[in-house]
Image 1 (tube, rainbow, N blue to C red):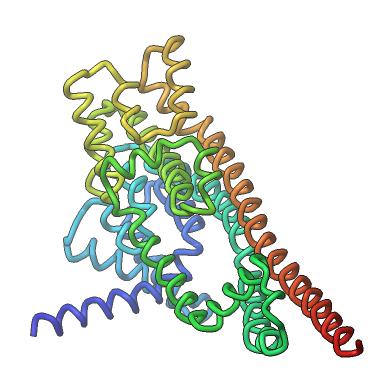
Image 2 (image 1 turned 180 degrees about the vertical axis):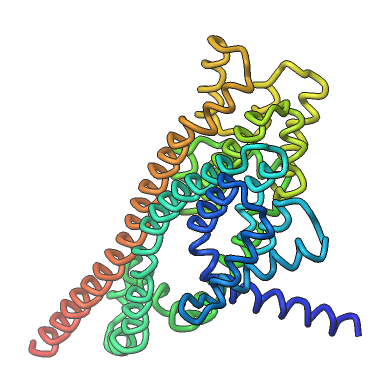
Amino acid sequence: MEWLLRVRDILADFFLGLSLRDFQGKRIAFYEELAKSFESREQFKTFLFEEMRIAKDPATSDSSRYKALSQMYKALSWGETYRMSDIIGRVMPASDRLMLTALDFTRNKSDTLRMLAESLRQQGLVIDIIRKAIIPPMIQIPGIAAFCYVMSTISLPIMVKMAPPEVWTPFNQAVRSFCEAVEAHGVMIALGAVATVMIYSWWLPRWTGFIRAAFEQLPRGAGLMLMPICPFILPLSIYRDFKVSLLLSSLAVLLQSGMTLTEALKALLPNSTPWLRWHLTRVLVSLQVNPTEYIQAFSLGLIGPKLLARLSSSIRHNPQFDKLIIKLGTSENAQIREEIAEVAKLLNLIILLILGGLIMFLYLGQFSISNDLADALGRQGQGRGR
C-alpha cells in the first residue's frame, strides 16, 4: 500500500507542476503585483483572496494562476506555515526559493520582490543566450543522422559490393566503419544521448564533493579545449556561475536587512540544492575557524577564479566584506551574467566546429570513396580492354 500512496503523490505532484507552468512563466508580473500590494499595506491573505477572485471570474479567467493562488491561500489559511518563502515557494520553480528566503528576514518586502523580479529578467536573458548557443547546433544533429543513415543503408552498401580492396584506404575505411556503426547502433546511440542529457540535468544540482569542485575550478579555456572528449566539464562552471549570481542577489538582500554574513549564509541553507548546501557548509566551517578570512572561505570552490580575483582586489580598498557582497549582488551582478554569455558563445562555436567537422568528414568520405571507386573500376576496364 505504501508504494501505491507514493505513486499517487508523485503523479499528483507531476500534474500540479503541469498546471502551474503557465503561472510560473508569468511569475515576474506576480512578484511585481505583490510588491505593490505590500507597499499599499494590504494583508497578504487579502491579496491572495482578491487575486483568486479575479482569476476565477469568467471575464478574467486564468486557471493556472487560480491554481497557484489557491495553493498559497490554502497553506496560509490552514496554518501549514507562516514563512513566506514556504508559502510562495511551493508554487514556484526551485531556483526562486533561494531568494524568496530573504522575504522571511527583511522588512522591506516590496524591494526584495522587485529585486527578485529584476534578477529573473537578467537570468532570462542569460538563459536565452545559452539556448541560442545550444539549440541551433542541436537542430543540425537529425540532418547529420539522416545523412549517415542514407550513406549507411543506400549508397555505401552499393559501393561495398562494387569496390575492390584497394578502395578501402585508412580514411575511406574510417568513414565506412563510422556509417556502419550508425546503421547498426544508431537508435541506441540516440536513446543513450537523450538519457545521458536527462541524467546529467538531474545530477547537476545534486553531485557534491571535491572531484566536482576540482572540475569547476578548471580554467574555462581548459574546459573549452576538453569539450570534444569531456563535454560535461564546461557546463559545471557555467552552472556554478549562474547559481552564484542568484546567491549573491539573495545575500545582498539579507545583508541589507541587517543580518551578518554568517547568519545570511545559514538562512539560505534550508532552500539550497545539495550542491549549493555543500559549498555553503564549507564556507561556514571556514568562517567559524577564521572569522575574518573571507577570501579564504570563498576560495574553496563556490566562487570562480575571475570573481574571486575581483573580490581579492576590492577588499584591499574596502575591508568591509559585507558591502562588497551587496555591491556584487546588486550593481555588479550583471558582469557575472555577461561572463556566462561569453562562455555560451564560445560553447556555440565549439559545438558548431565539431558538427561542421563531422559533416565535412562524411562529405569528403563520400567523395573520396566515389572517386577511388571510379578510378579502380576505370583501371579494371582498361585492363580488360587490353
